[in-house]
Image 1 (tube, helix red, strand yellow):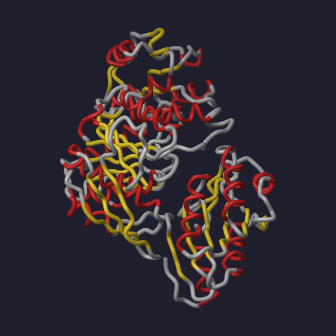
Image 2 (cartoon, rainbow, N blue to C red):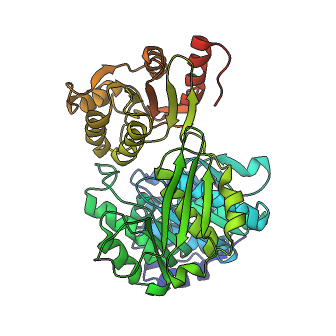
Image 3 (cartoon, helix red, strand yellow):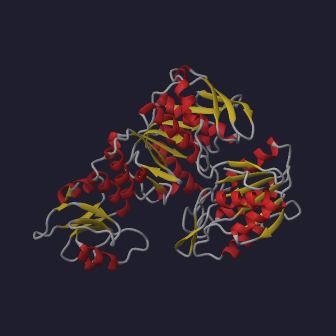
Length: 521
């Protein structure tokens, strides 16, 4: 693959991003590699000077290693002798030029994008499970858990960001196309729009699941309005929009969808019986609970409008995941499969046995209650999880192990305090990716907001010990919730991914030691 200097200039001019350019007569004008990492350079590389932490010495390194052209928001003396493209916004430029370099792989994929404060990953996995039946396993996935760009083992790998940097995203999409994948399901975070990682990308289907305050802090969104604005951009860039009619801020969400999409390509879904006279159009799909137990969830999906009835997905469904909130996630995914051309029977088979690493992984012990490992990592998902357990198990004692990450999501800490006060009987506050912050300070910040007359708190920074203590103290009718890290096998500590067995492995080990080798996740 390659891209010419002239093509770069034309693309940047078309999008009004180019401020100036410097072309060197002695250098080749065809770039055969792209990178934003000075350690990853090949001959004739197009190098992007991006990020708040960029240093001019990185450009010197890139030049020495073979970069011949750089893209930046200002000229650098270190780039003397290189082609230079000076732009108004380097992250937007990187997205556009990366897409062109990798020959616009999105044009060869049916692209589905999902956003929401909670439920993105579960919905994405549900939808992949169904689409794999449609296309013979040729569904690519970009999620906060794993990325899948092919059918070989090396094409399935742990993701580092919910939505990758634009250059990495388009490279992975090209790899998926070259591997014969036909569909792509991707989670799109608010940061993806904040940082222009998906700038210029249009989706065949765009989902808006829900919105509540999250990712607000000095390194993320300055306020909720900014967070919501970034979330809404997904709908603006989707050909068809699927929206949860029960989401907060529905009027703003719907308005965003209508800026680029006709109402007949906007689909609404909700629980059966939900009524809101302010809705601008009828709810197209309604779901109703049939039965939920500790092994599966059963619900019915009704196509309620003429437009919806053209999508042949009416009927009953079973999920191998508990939690009534998964009825909503499942419904969204089934609508997506239907709009991709699937019908009820194949959808029902495709979604039936989907599981997600670190999501609602449950073990019923003999003497220490029910242990659940879940990725719930903000107030909305914590409340959904704990309130479900209270309803389902006749108001049990709820013991929670949870921590909050450092360097980001500062707003989550107050949300944890509120949710624990409202639903938990006992909380073990522990370490969860503290980064460059002091984990004890983070735990104390959460603890300070908890009503201790409602929830007893222990701070135990050793996460493995916190899990052990929580399960050990539980009796047979209690529920132990191990939250936020899911299947993560490391802790992010001072810039280093420090190995950690994962909550699932630790919990299983504790159960085995307490009750013998009889448990399994």
